[in-house]
Image (cartoon, rainbow, N blue to C red; front, side, top):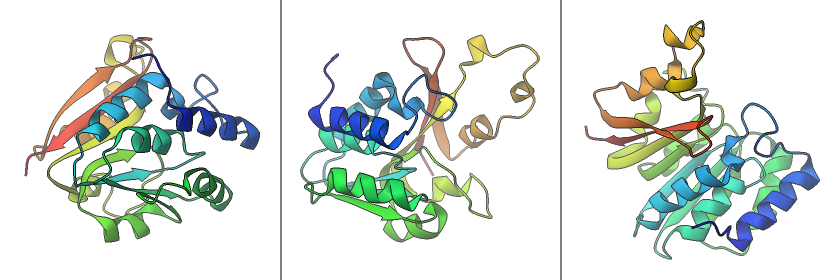
Length: 197
Protein backbone atom coordinates (compact mmCIF):
# COMPACT_ATOMS: atom_id res chain seq x y z
CA UNK A 1 0.00 0.00 0.00
CA UNK A 2 2.95 2.35 0.50
CA UNK A 3 4.54 1.68 -2.89
CA UNK A 4 4.65 4.53 -5.38
CA UNK A 5 4.33 3.35 -9.01
CA UNK A 6 7.35 3.99 -11.28
CA UNK A 7 5.33 6.31 -13.56
CA UNK A 8 4.40 8.45 -10.55
CA UNK A 9 8.05 8.64 -9.51
CA UNK A 10 8.92 9.84 -13.02
CA UNK A 11 6.14 12.45 -12.79
CA UNK A 12 7.51 13.65 -9.45
CA UNK A 13 10.96 14.01 -11.00
CA UNK A 14 9.47 15.92 -13.93
CA UNK A 15 7.61 18.21 -11.52
CA UNK A 16 10.84 19.06 -9.72
CA UNK A 17 12.59 19.74 -13.05
CA UNK A 18 9.76 22.07 -14.10
CA UNK A 19 9.62 23.83 -10.73
CA UNK A 20 6.06 22.57 -10.24
CA UNK A 21 5.14 22.57 -6.53
CA UNK A 22 5.06 19.17 -4.88
CA UNK A 23 3.09 18.28 -1.75
CA UNK A 24 3.80 20.66 1.07
CA UNK A 25 5.02 23.23 -1.44
CA UNK A 26 2.04 25.53 -1.11
CA UNK A 27 -1.62 25.85 -1.97
CA UNK A 28 -2.96 23.86 -4.85
CA UNK A 29 -0.39 21.09 -4.72
CA UNK A 30 -2.10 18.30 -2.83
CA UNK A 31 -2.49 16.14 -5.95
CA UNK A 32 1.16 15.45 -5.27
CA UNK A 33 0.30 13.87 -1.93
CA UNK A 34 0.74 10.10 -2.13
CA UNK A 35 -2.49 9.56 -0.18
CA UNK A 36 -4.44 11.59 -2.75
CA UNK A 37 -2.84 9.52 -5.48
CA UNK A 38 -3.64 6.26 -3.73
CA UNK A 39 -7.29 7.30 -3.35
CA UNK A 40 -7.47 8.14 -7.06
CA UNK A 41 -5.81 4.81 -7.89
CA UNK A 42 -8.45 2.91 -5.89
CA UNK A 43 -11.22 4.57 -7.89
CA UNK A 44 -9.43 4.24 -11.23
CA UNK A 45 -8.84 0.52 -10.70
CA UNK A 46 -12.61 -0.06 -10.86
CA UNK A 47 -13.13 1.83 -14.10
CA UNK A 48 -13.49 -1.16 -16.45
CA UNK A 49 -14.35 -0.10 -19.98
CA UNK A 50 -14.94 3.46 -18.82
CA UNK A 51 -13.51 6.92 -19.15
CA UNK A 52 -11.65 9.04 -16.63
CA UNK A 53 -11.27 12.82 -16.90
CA UNK A 54 -8.82 15.10 -15.14
CA UNK A 55 -8.94 18.88 -14.96
CA UNK A 56 -5.49 20.31 -14.31
CA UNK A 57 -2.80 17.90 -15.49
CA UNK A 58 0.04 19.94 -14.01
CA UNK A 59 3.24 17.93 -14.33
CA UNK A 60 1.24 14.70 -14.66
CA UNK A 61 1.37 13.33 -11.11
CA UNK A 62 -2.38 12.78 -10.74
CA UNK A 63 -2.60 11.37 -14.27
CA UNK A 64 0.29 9.02 -13.48
CA UNK A 65 -1.54 7.68 -10.41
CA UNK A 66 -4.71 7.19 -12.45
CA UNK A 67 -2.98 5.57 -15.44
CA UNK A 68 -0.92 3.28 -13.21
CA UNK A 69 -4.06 1.77 -11.70
CA UNK A 70 -6.75 1.88 -14.38
CA UNK A 71 -7.59 -1.26 -16.35
CA UNK A 72 -6.43 -1.66 -19.95
CA UNK A 73 -10.04 -1.15 -21.08
CA UNK A 74 -10.20 2.34 -19.56
CA UNK A 75 -9.23 5.67 -21.12
CA UNK A 76 -7.97 8.87 -19.49
CA UNK A 77 -8.39 12.39 -20.86
CA UNK A 78 -6.50 15.06 -18.93
CA UNK A 79 -6.54 18.79 -19.70
CA UNK A 80 -3.98 21.43 -18.72
CA UNK A 81 -4.38 25.16 -19.39
CA UNK A 82 -0.61 25.82 -19.26
CA UNK A 83 0.81 24.74 -22.62
CA UNK A 84 4.32 24.15 -21.25
CA UNK A 85 3.03 21.80 -18.55
CA UNK A 86 0.68 20.05 -20.98
CA UNK A 87 3.57 19.41 -23.37
CA UNK A 88 5.79 18.05 -20.59
CA UNK A 89 3.02 15.79 -19.24
CA UNK A 90 2.25 14.56 -22.77
CA UNK A 91 5.90 13.56 -23.08
CA UNK A 92 5.75 11.73 -19.78
CA UNK A 93 2.61 9.80 -20.75
CA UNK A 94 3.29 9.36 -24.49
CA UNK A 95 3.90 5.61 -24.27
CA UNK A 96 0.43 4.88 -22.88
CA UNK A 97 -2.16 4.77 -25.69
CA UNK A 98 -4.99 4.89 -23.13
CA UNK A 99 -4.00 8.44 -22.07
CA UNK A 100 -4.69 11.66 -23.94
CA UNK A 101 -3.16 14.93 -22.68
CA UNK A 102 -4.82 18.06 -24.04
CA UNK A 103 -3.75 21.69 -23.76
CA UNK A 104 -6.51 24.23 -23.24
CA UNK A 105 -9.33 25.41 -21.05
CA UNK A 106 -10.99 22.34 -19.54
CA UNK A 107 -14.46 23.90 -19.65
CA UNK A 108 -14.13 24.28 -23.43
CA UNK A 109 -12.37 20.97 -24.15
CA UNK A 110 -13.56 18.33 -21.68
CA UNK A 111 -17.33 18.25 -22.38
CA UNK A 112 -16.63 16.71 -25.80
CA UNK A 113 -15.23 13.63 -24.05
CA UNK A 114 -18.01 13.23 -21.46
CA UNK A 115 -19.65 11.38 -19.84
CA UNK A 116 -17.03 10.25 -17.36
CA UNK A 117 -17.01 7.36 -14.92
CA UNK A 118 -14.49 9.28 -12.79
CA UNK A 119 -13.61 12.97 -12.90
CA UNK A 120 -10.75 14.43 -10.88
CA UNK A 121 -11.10 18.22 -10.75
CA UNK A 122 -7.65 19.48 -9.80
CA UNK A 123 -7.51 22.69 -11.80
CA UNK A 124 -9.51 25.76 -12.79
CA UNK A 125 -13.07 25.29 -14.05
CA UNK A 126 -14.11 28.41 -15.95
CA UNK A 127 -17.58 27.35 -17.09
CA UNK A 128 -20.08 30.26 -16.96
CA UNK A 129 -22.54 27.86 -15.34
CA UNK A 130 -20.21 27.49 -12.36
CA UNK A 131 -18.94 24.37 -10.60
CA UNK A 132 -22.35 22.67 -10.71
CA UNK A 133 -21.73 21.94 -14.39
CA UNK A 134 -19.00 19.49 -13.36
CA UNK A 135 -21.77 17.07 -12.36
CA UNK A 136 -23.13 17.25 -15.92
CA UNK A 137 -19.88 15.64 -17.14
CA UNK A 138 -20.53 12.46 -15.13
CA UNK A 139 -22.60 9.50 -16.17
CA UNK A 140 -25.11 8.32 -13.57
CA UNK A 141 -22.94 6.38 -11.12
CA UNK A 142 -19.86 8.39 -12.09
CA UNK A 143 -17.64 9.81 -9.37
CA UNK A 144 -16.32 13.33 -8.86
CA UNK A 145 -13.24 14.07 -6.72
CA UNK A 146 -11.90 17.48 -5.68
CA UNK A 147 -8.78 17.99 -3.61
CA UNK A 148 -7.18 20.95 -1.84
CA UNK A 149 -9.77 20.92 0.93
CA UNK A 150 -9.09 21.70 4.59
CA UNK A 151 -10.88 19.16 6.80
CA UNK A 152 -13.80 20.62 8.73
CA UNK A 153 -12.26 19.32 11.94
CA UNK A 154 -9.26 21.65 11.57
CA UNK A 155 -10.91 24.60 9.80
CA UNK A 156 -10.27 27.73 11.90
CA UNK A 157 -13.41 29.08 13.61
CA UNK A 158 -13.04 32.44 11.85
CA UNK A 159 -12.63 30.95 8.37
CA UNK A 160 -15.02 32.42 5.78
CA UNK A 161 -15.42 28.87 4.45
CA UNK A 162 -17.84 28.14 7.30
CA UNK A 163 -20.30 30.57 5.71
CA UNK A 164 -19.60 29.76 2.06
CA UNK A 165 -17.33 27.12 0.55
CA UNK A 166 -17.85 26.70 -3.21
CA UNK A 167 -16.42 23.18 -3.16
CA UNK A 168 -18.60 21.96 -0.31
CA UNK A 169 -21.60 23.78 -1.79
CA UNK A 170 -21.14 21.75 -4.99
CA UNK A 171 -21.02 18.49 -3.04
CA UNK A 172 -24.23 19.41 -1.22
CA UNK A 173 -26.07 18.98 -4.54
CA UNK A 174 -28.97 16.48 -4.41
CA UNK A 175 -27.49 15.08 -7.64
CA UNK A 176 -24.54 13.68 -5.65
CA UNK A 177 -24.10 11.33 -2.72
CA UNK A 178 -20.90 12.70 -1.24
CA UNK A 179 -18.49 12.78 1.66
CA UNK A 180 -15.31 14.40 2.90
CA UNK A 181 -12.31 12.05 2.91
CA UNK A 182 -9.69 13.20 5.42
CA UNK A 183 -6.19 12.09 4.49
CA UNK A 184 -3.94 10.39 7.06
CA UNK A 185 -1.96 13.59 7.74
CA UNK A 186 -5.25 15.08 9.09
CA UNK A 187 -4.42 18.42 7.40
CA UNK A 188 -5.69 17.65 3.90
CA UNK A 189 -8.99 16.31 2.62
CA UNK A 190 -10.77 15.40 -0.57
CA UNK A 191 -14.42 15.71 -1.45
CA UNK A 192 -15.83 12.71 -3.27
CA UNK A 193 -19.29 12.19 -4.67
CA UNK A 194 -21.22 9.81 -6.90
CA UNK A 195 -23.78 11.17 -9.36
CA UNK A 196 -27.18 9.66 -8.61
CA UNK A 197 -29.34 11.76 -10.97
